[in-house]
Image 1 (tube, helix red, strand yellow):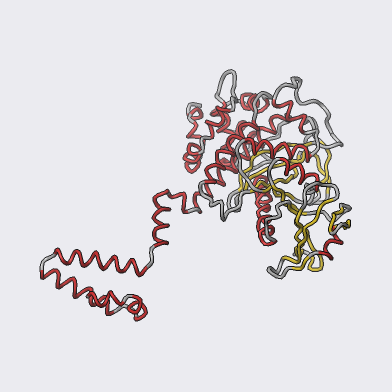
Image 2 (cartoon, helix red, strand yellow):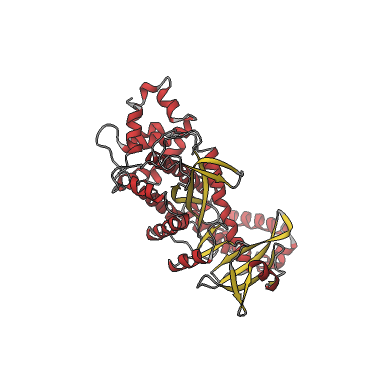
Length: 452
């Protein structure tokens, strides 16, 4: 077990440098996640983080042939089950620090900075005794399941997605109504109370916490389940714009002093021919809201005869900018797919403790953040260093004709200081090079020929 106490031995070589660069364990210490005795939280957290790279579940590692090299199950579950550990604070602190690094790689005038809000299914079909477990409906697969609704808030700039906060929400048809914690003052008990609340209320609080943590974004992107005039008003009061898919339901809007439904506004909207996907747009006032909105009607790829409506309270955006910004929302769908299929969100642990589920989900989100940062560093040339980026800017600003003239001045300066024999050699080689230049370059640089 000696090698286990060395944190670096638990991680793949590729992860060691990123773990240190992003100060993962420093954020863990600042959150005051601790244990009374035995292995430190840093060692256990790193061990749980590295499970996905071993290709095994927690039970397989601690019950396999090499089980004597690791800590016992009770040691791990004591940390995961402890209701005093504030995993939300850790994830907020850590994600905000990574987003700050990403901000340095983005140009605010050309890049998007958005918050993305969505929910996904968290299956626990084999569970019976997990507190708050409920029977819910999967709208994507059109079937029922046992588990939770995983409400997630993330940040995206169009290139990288960083999960910021989440909540495991229950439902009305609960399988187990047992309280998760006896002490209602703990962080675990507060998370369990949150699971019984409505999804829009929890979503508003998530956005508020992200803004308070210093995460800067211009818009909150959401699908039609969340988008409503009341939701837009509540986010507008927080100082952030909303952009989402509008429901074609009973909601009415004021246009030219009359009330219309969304389908009727489609006939009144102004046609646009600037982009093939955009049909028309209109600015209206929701009857159940206080903030005017702009609605852009776009073609439905799945049904050419149908349309979809995008709604935002940011009236300064053009229709093209609205469509471009909303397309960033797909990043969170990719995040859900990767977390479940590759990062073992649902399969790695079979715990019956609600707080342990919160801990496990936080670790999976941490894995995604590190992989997202690693991908960004591999694809973004600006991560190679400030000197490289400054030189790249200078090269872009330097005209090629000016560069040739400066090269000629250098050669002439060297030639003047050389001996007559070397000077004749330089001039002859330079003249041969000039004679081989294309005519269009000689036309741009007439002084080059004259000086020689």
